[in-house]
Image (cartoon, rainbow, N blue to C red; front, top):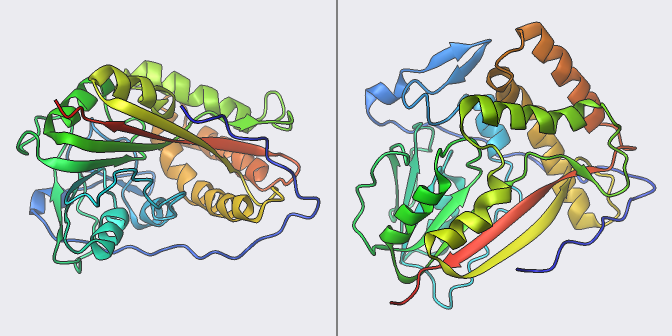
Length: 312
């Protein structure tokens, strides 16, 4: 395991670095995939409602396309030729990888058909639920990419065992997850604040739904227990806003703050399952206020875990 990340130095004059978000298109697949549901003015998946709890409308797509650490940390000595992107969302990662590696075959899977219509010839998308049996051949993929899958898999051990079966000997899996736990190195997240309570909300939802939202914290152990070897983990602190002195962290913080401000309503309206709409909106207003407060030096951990399938 890689060493723990260092403490983030605070900038005495935080400011923005003006990074733009990415847009998203739609991709036409079977008509049943477009039977969406609407709740509180937000659009949700019509199919596989037990496999993903979040919205899939344009507001959420824009938020999801603001990728943090979007470059893959592939440590294979050769470029993978058969690649599977699980939970591909708008397809941004799969498309970028296919563009940069034209000899590779890239397949993206998601339960919503929200990918663009114009894609590289070596990239395709499928609508499917990864909680159901996989239809790919065994020992097929050189690389499986998994990102932002909190609250989507009921049994991560079984998921990684299935992934191991479909990866070729010597191939790799990469899982990239943002922790749902809010943290601060200097104690500036006040006790009883909305940001502090936000972590507890995810724990409560995990218990009520019987599915973990603390995927980042369990990914290393799940990959290891499934039978992967040569496992590496990198932990990166992603700040809420532009308060860090380091320019790279400041840029990441601006992106992440925008992501949260855009996407937090979609996360919360169905997650706060025992709250009224008005109660949820009041809580969200408190979170947004604290996210914009430069005196609060909060962050989330981004955890990147790799594992390799044994050669024999």
